[in-house]
Image (tube, rainbow, N blue to C red; front, side, top):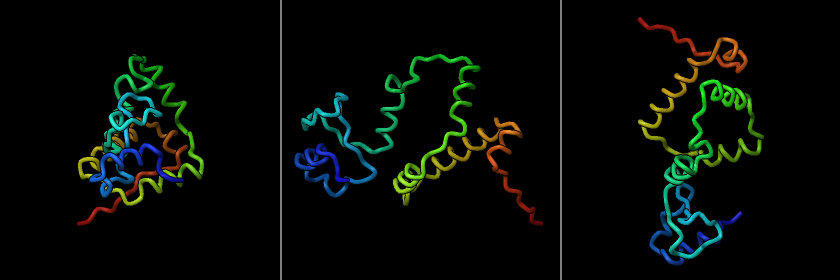
Amino acid sequence: MGKPIYWDIWNKHNPNDLKIMGDRFVIHHINGKHFDNRPENLQKMPLSEHSILHNTGKDNGMYGNNHTNETKEKIRLAATGRKMSDETRAKVYAAQKGSKRSEESKKRMAEAGKKYWDTLTVEERKARGVKRKKYKRTK
């Protein structure tokens, strides 16, 4: 599948950006209207910033929802055990393949994983079939 038409429009009006366009950049529609492909409505930005833009604040579907801890737990449990299809998993893997993460990003991900693991009960850990690795101590 080729790139959407707005990439062609962006590249036509910004020829110096051709060599840096690719999988890690996206074209954002400033006014939010996906079919408004006027050059002044298009903005190139890193994928990470685009994700933050659309997943925080008012663009986040959960914005303004002050959930109780009980409701948050229900949401978490409803999401637990959801599985991606093999096709989706392959697409995600292909999109992430070869990407480099900063040391700061790796540290945050590791801390989040440990924090999450510590919230699970023994039964939940067993249900996931994941065990923490045991390391031998060296003298």
